Length: 295
Image (cartoon, rainbow, N blue to C red; front, side):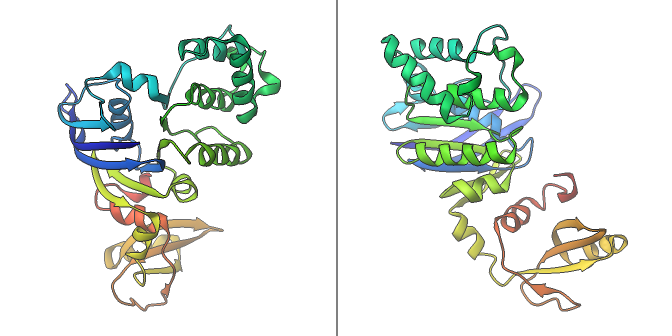
């Protein structure tokens, strides 16, 4: 299965250009969509999920026209939006059973087996009879993941899925997505670089509605080989360094500021060359558009 997005654009009535001429090709496996808050990730996800119209462009899922054949797409889709509501007085078990019916699982025994399997996968099995209104934020997020996986979807969209998850829950989620991504198209929209570097064989960086990079993490990192330098400085000197070097990221450690700069040659002045990582790629790509101190 292949998802092909071609020259897609969307402008809202308030004039915000949320998606600008986006073209991407996604095959089975994990695809990361990386960008800061407000970059257009959620707008792109909602369009793919048939929840809003595009102004221009096309989306094709194999032989299905996503923008026109919405019912066919929804039969193959699992979707976890960034924000979603739950019915507070229904248990997780009851809600998933209802969703399974809507997905066409008519056999009661098969539904029960499927519901229990998914609840176990997201570590909610012991809480399956509790009302959803009693769930914590992290538990609701895990329930959202379970409902997105119902019905063996061929296309799964998860928008900021690790928000609110503790490290153990996040690791469990990583393992689950890696497992289902073997024969499914999974789009992971996030602003967390670790999510992409851990899970995704291919990814794109999006900012202000535009795709700034698309490819593999390894290819992206290789483009910066020999160009990233690091130095620890006093916090009060940071503005001076920003004037004289292309500072791509800063990190405060024990009262001292570690900075990373992009340079085609050794800037000397106490800098040490370091191996680039995906965060360097990310900050280098969006640095001219977004203040790194606001991310």
